[in-house]
Image (cartoon, rainbow, N blue to C red; front, side, top):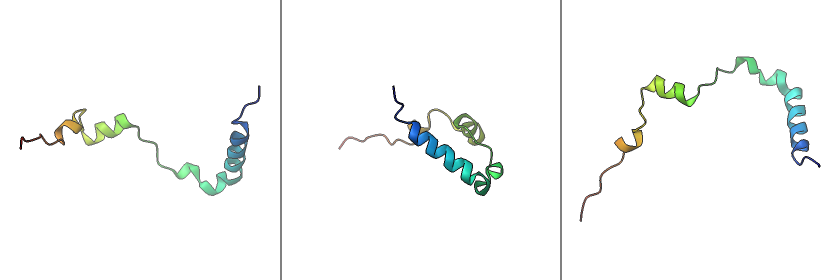
Length: 58
């Protein structure tokens, strides 16, 4: 069985290896996951309900 994605994976690996020094990956900020963002901004799970207007009868 031939892996169809193998060529793309090899290309990406080669590009990352070639340009890793220029990308300066160590200088990137730490990733923030959705749970951390919610805790940081004190959002609730009902955010969408709060922003939805009620329909009025014509």
